Length: 243
Image (cartoon, rainbow, N blue to C red):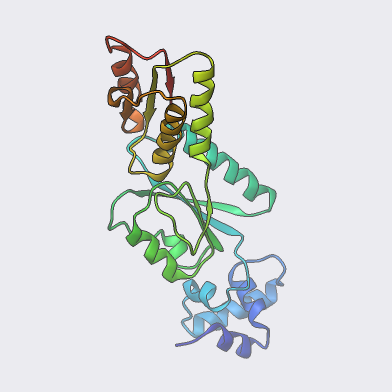
C-alpha cells in the first residue's frame, strides 16, 4: 500500500508539500501540484488517508456535531446561539465550519468528515451516549464538548454553572417576596437540567421553603408550554416560575 512518503520520494518534494498539493492549497505551484497528483493516481493512493499520515498539516476545517432533535436546529434558542458563536469564532480564525446533525440513538455512525480525517478536530454539542463518545476517542482527534450529558475527562468541556445560576434566579424571586415558585426544565436525566434543579432546590431549602412536587415540571422543549399551563391551572398556582 502506497503512502504519502512514497509520493514525496518519487516527486522529490517534502511530505508537507504533497499534503498541501492534495489539499489544493494555494501555496503550491500548479506544475508541482499536477506532478504530485499524477504520481498519486499512478500509485492508487487513497486521498482519505492523507489526514492520518500528515496530521501536522491543517485542513482548516472543524466538524461541529449536533445531536439532532425532532425540530429544526434553528428552533432551539440555546443550540442556535451556540452555533452562531462557534461560527463567528471559526471565521475569525480562518477556519471552516463543517456541520453534522446526528440522530440521538445508540447506533449512530460517526460523521464522515471526522471518521475520514478530513477535519482538524470536532466540537460536540448536546447529548451523546457513551458508545458514541468511546468511538470518538479512538479517532484521536482534538474534541471539545459543549453541554455534555456525561463528563468525559479526556476531552475539553465547556460547561455552564447551571446550579449556581438557578440558585441565584430562585433566590432573587424569594427576595422579591415569592414563596411559591414553580420550576420548569428539560429532563432531569441530563446533567445541565439536573444541576439547575439542584440550584432551585438549594435556594428553597436555604430559605426554609418546602419543595412541592407539583411545582416541578420537566420534559422536552416542545412540552414547555404545556408544563407552564399545568402550573397555572393549579388551584394554588405559583406566583413565579424559574425555567
